[in-house]
Length: 191
Image (cartoon, rainbow, N blue to C red):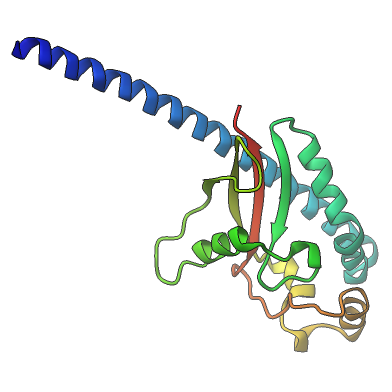
C-alpha cells in the first residue's frame, strides 16, 4: 500500500513539474518577445534622435519626439504578430499619451525601488486584454537625453521655447544620467 501511495505521489509531482515547466516556458516566451520589442523600440528611437541631433541639433530631436515617436512605437509593435501594443509611460511625462495608467504607475514604482533590489523587467497578466501579459522594462535616462530632459537651467532658450510650444504642460525635466525616466510596456499575446 505504501508503495502505491509513493508511486501516486511521484506521478503527481512529475505532472506538476511538467506543468511548471510549461508555465516557465510560456513566461520565457513572453519575456523574450517583450525584451526584443523594447530593445527594438529603444534602438530605433536612439537612431532617430541621434540622426536628428547631428542634422539639426536639439530642436530637430524635439520634433522627432513630438511627431515621430508614437508612430515609430506603433510600427515596432506591428512587426511582431505576438505584440498587441507597445507604450512608453512616465510619471513626469511630456506627451499626454505617455501618461501612465494605474498599472504602469505601479510598474514605475517597482522600478524606482527605494532601497530594494530593482528588477530589470517584470511580467504581469494583462488587465486590458484577455489571454495576454504585460511586459515592463525600465527606461533609464541617458546622457544625450539631458539636452531636453535635464535641468531647465542648463537648457538653451531655443530648446525651452520649443518644448513649451509643443508641450505646454511638460513635466519631463530635471532628470540626471542613469535615473529612471519611465517604463516601456509591451502587451504580448499568450498563445
